[in-house]
Image (cartoon, rainbow, N blue to C red; front, side, top):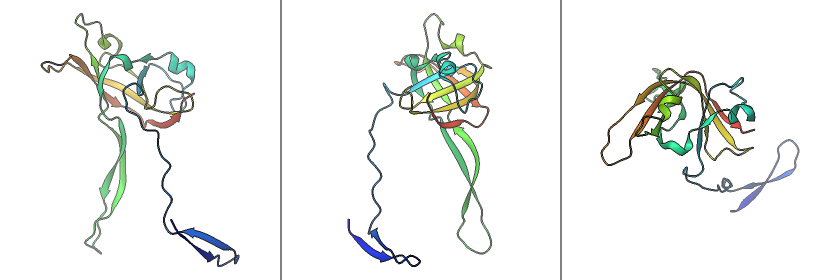
Length: 177
């Protein structure tokens, strides 16, 4: 990576400018298994800043999860065409959550997540992408359970597919207490 020296137009100071942008710092990569956790928490006073006691009062769903939706917080884009050009610029639209689902293993005696999260249950799903570790980040989703699907897929473990409505704007990248 080379650089060039230029003179600041107001101060006259010499500034060294690189020829190319520096790279982003390297990440410590991981896979979700063994790291990512999901909790259901029935009550949080301020979901933008949950307390450790509130999180501990929740239920760790992680050991029974067979799969999840993306839970991606996304903003739609809207076309904003005008008559002056053939190019169609876009603006940001409304925010939503993409595929808020959790597949939990079903129990042969029906003593599973169906008792904890019946349809209509309200509360919070808390997603810890890198685990429940103080100082890392979590996302908090105010939710209502919409469905307990029971898909039948041969030769795979049976699951209860929970579908959620996210009822308020999620709290994204909240520091874990």
